[in-house]
Amino acid sequence: MSQPPKANYFDDLHAPQVFADEVSGYWVNAGCVHITLDASRIDHSSDSCFVNRAAVLRLTLPVAIAQVLAVSLYDFLKQRGLAPSPGNGH
Image (cartoon, rainbow, N blue to C red):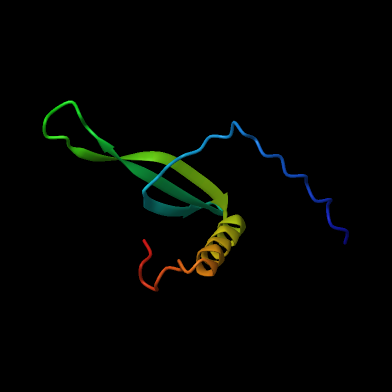
């Protein structure tokens, strides 16, 4: 069986960039992993400055791609001495 040709990578300088400081949850449905990322939001409208959490990105990946992401991210962090300890997951 022949392999499809490898696609060329195109670096889109206008691609959105999202900052998140927490993962709020995961869900698996219809062969996809759904990941919700959120960030702290501060309400400066009062002196109390309440901190709220806001969903900033919902990422949906086919299970096989989510597995590739999980392994490659772990390897990337491990190579830099940043591998998570067992039990520190979400």
